[in-house]
Image (cartoon, rainbow, N blue to C red; front, side, top):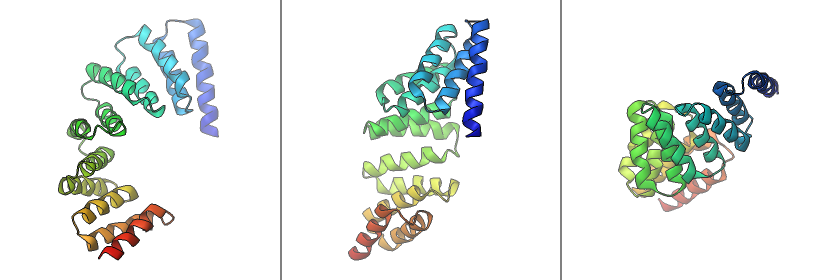
Length: 208
């Protein structure tokens, strides 16, 4: 609640700044940022659009429009904005990652891997990039390769229940059931009420 109040206060302050200087691109940017934090994504996009109109080289404004569009599940358009952000800042690992993520959502798994690789090259400790690369490889039935990605994701974030679960799926596909159950046990330890995890463990146990 305190954070929400602070964000509302920040928006009021930047609104006043715009009253004093209607061409203050940064004020629009920060209002857009605050609105995004408040999950008012459509309004945040309007503010970032205005920031870009005033400062067309603001890579982060393009990035945050892409992010907001992704939250609105407008993945095709989000990719366009992340592409523009990368054009202005080629070292933005998150922009590459979110293009990969959008491509996964669009079921363009093979394309997504290229972007996860670029994100990982820029930030080798990017756990989510390793995870979703592994997920894409798993969907493409490249199970051995996916295991390497899930292992890295787990190394970086041992409490990622989804990484343990997807690793178990890959192991089960390879008929390595005992290993799969170990990762499922860890996933269930982390999320004891996850029915999908429990159901899959029962399924594997009956397969052995």
